[in-house]
Length: 239
Ligand SMILES: CC(=O)N[C@H](C=O)[C@@H](O)[C@H](O)[C@H](O)COP(=O)(O)O
Image (cartoon, rainbow, N blue to C red; front, side):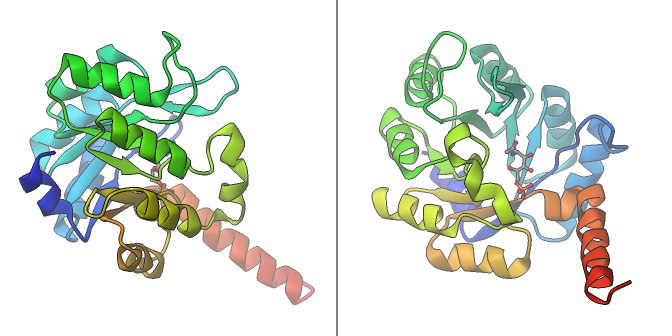
């Protein structure tokens, strides 16, 4: 583990700056503008998806950048940086940390998350964040050599979909991860931490840092939350 890097993130906010097809921000420059704004606001780190976007953000900010790529399993659920080539490309792009899928699902080559991380660590001296969905996966990834874990995928794997209902963070799962892992091992809170109060609570529980994406960098979703709330109110008033 790189102590200086992890110390710089401890107790801090990491902003995930990602954009998907259809978003006007879906360019390296678009996500980079979000990253620069996030740093102005006090973000201690940036997380982003895509090799070019990682390279562009690295050029434009001085804080550590967590890079990843996304692909999909045959059932449509997301896989975070599931290929060795992508890990290498993200490092070349300047990522300080590479986020990889630490779930137990078998990816190309048949490896589950922990074995995949073990193989990456055997090949390269790279700082790895394991994106996990359960405390068991968190422990397995730690034992496999991951430098930190993040609760990113809780709510997005076939067995944990129920956690995403209600669009609330999985506080209990975060707490269980903190309990099974050694004290002072970095556990990042990520996934639906949509309010400052939720982010604060995660740090109070013992999360190393909190990663916030949608509530800061997906304006179409934030807009939708407001629109839905107003429509619900309208229904209550019989409008
Ligand atoms: C499941 C998945 O693909 N998560 C992605 C991981 O990089 C991102 O789309 C999320 O925005 C990020 O994890 C932050 O979470 P939230 O946007 O809920 O603050």
